[in-house]
Amino acid sequence: MLLILSLVVLFISFFSCEEKETSNGEDQLWYGFPSLVDTYYTPKTVSLRQTVIKNEFYADYPCLIMDCVMADDKTYSFDSESEQEKNAFEKYATFFGDTLCDGSHIKQHYASVLPVISIEVTADRQFDRKHPVDSLLNDILYLYVWRDYRYEFELKRTYDKWYNGEEEPRKPLDSISADNPVYMLPKWFRLHFKKNPDTLGTYNLTITMKFGADPVTGETVEIDPIKVQMEFK
Image (tube, rainbow, N blue to C red; front, side, top):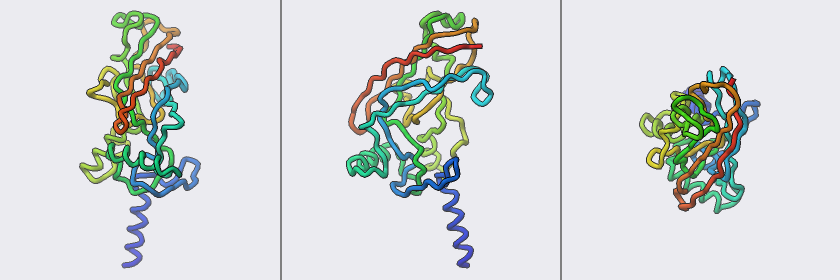
């Protein structure tokens, strides 16, 4: 009987809501607040990491990989040496409902405390008949985030089970608004085109992102537009 109980405990520990190893196989566990996210952050700016063209791993059409640059003095981690920072972390985790985990962490989960209320993309050339110069391309783009934390929390509360990866977290850009924001944006994300332009070639894109207010402090942040040169082949 003791052996059976030991095996059950081992099984539960192995299949907790966090994986137990990083990609290089090293154990990177910390134990603390029962959250999925390790660090909440306030974005300072957004930058382009790279453009991807005709890569079967991503899509048939180009996409942009973007990174959020975090404000150095406005990151909040569950294991910070600062009590003030840890207290702020707990407030954000509680607000977002991020209290359902077992306390294990891998220090790679980041989430913005500011909701995204709009992402707008324009081009310096006519994209197609429906999209002249400088018109919004939002209806032919979608946002991809590698993990939709809020959706996972909702499923966990409903079914008492984690369903990570059950549904690809994609969101059309023209569906994002103040009434339908993107909560808990990870540190990186992708913007995917649904089609190529009528005329292939190089386009200069302007990406404007707007964030809503911090739910704890009420703070707002303005992000400068991002200029990107993109080649469609």
